[in-house]
Length: 87
Image (cartoon, rainbow, N blue to C red):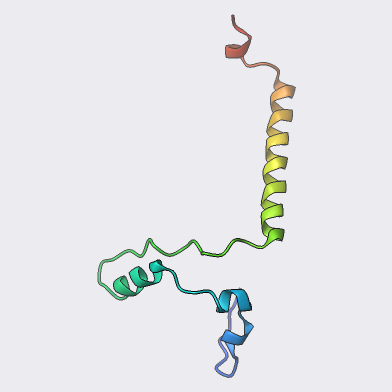
């Protein structure tokens, strides 16, 4: 995937208003404090303050339910495990 930067493009206008208007959290202070410091590994970045869109949450839920169902089906096909049938 190639990303081309365009100096005449207004990137801020393309950000969803909810994200654009979100207030910075305290982690921003930590980030700013550590920015540019030699030898510092920025492990504080990665998780946002806003909940994911409902469509993403529903897709994750459906995927997890599918994985659980699939695992149960595979266990049923194999039969009981030796440790469960003993006794």
